[in-house]
Length: 461
Image 1 (cartoon, helix red, strand yellow):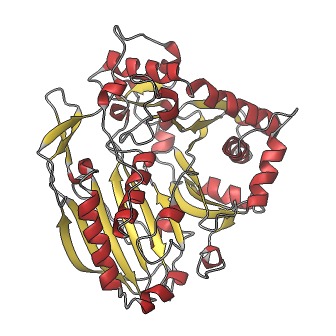
Image 2 (cartoon, rainbow, N blue to C red):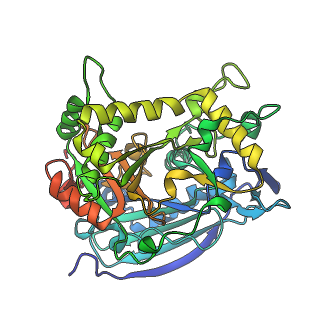
Image 3 (cartoon, rainbow, N blue to C red):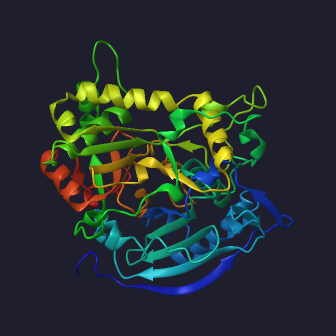
């Protein structure tokens, strides 16, 4: 059977609500939430049939029941996920925490886990194992596989939560399913992100964010382009990442692995450009939680804060400049790009910038491409994806990944840790087909198309 040609049939559709509903309330969006357009992201977790299932007489039906029951419980502390996003009188989104519930689908796929073509998630995962969200803030699908394994697929509304928030939710959900004490108690203190009085204008933010109303329509050559963005998943060995880090570091200054990887990707994509004057934009997602700790209370940690606390600074060079530049120099530029946004002052300024422009919606500039761009990509580190903690009672996943085909012409790349915990990476990439093909040609020794040999199927894998 063609590994993408399988049928998914629905066994049951339910709406799961919080087992102890909170009184209906409106949770306003922070200024940082307001920078997110209507956009969904997915996460999927693949579990193999284990000897534990047989010993405990745990059928896939029973496993689905465990997952569903724990979902009703985790929606108590994570109550916004059972709500819906509505517009207020200013036309801005806000969270109506109404316990309207989460769409929950129990499905069956006539395919085995080892046959899944995870290298091509657009055909094997999207809309098949990761649901298309039709309503609410979160949708869940649990799919039984032919082999006795199953896949948990979730789709989140990004306006309500970032990856950090989703990771907290998944970890807590898995802990509850095993009746373990929970690690995270989320809090929703929007007062942490109020603007200064008066809000202060910072020109550096003008270079990174733009009002939607000021964006011109896409140029004709982009509209009629035959190339489109595709998703692929790759596997990178730890030694490949270490080698990139070594090559990107200089004079005793060690670049981080994500900086080294991003610089390498930036340069590799430029290699495919024929017009040396065209630009290649590289954005890096920066989480502001650590930067804003202590803003309101001296010892308050933001690690359990639920919402969006992100900024996406970007840097841009021409194809010609990148082709003639060493990896060391490119990594230095990536580092300085991240460094300027990884500060308390940057996030204060971003909060103020949004306040000065409300209620007009804004968006990060790197998401807006034009005719002068060879490419634009955003790299988001998924190194905190807690895949090895997501044990619902029958072992950790054989595989887990984000799935984020976010539309537009800007690429999105997320490297995550392999479940093997040996330093290997799983990399989700959503890029133009020509750039994916270029990466496979130019960097075949680094990016390996994901296949079943990369799944953690054996105990000692």
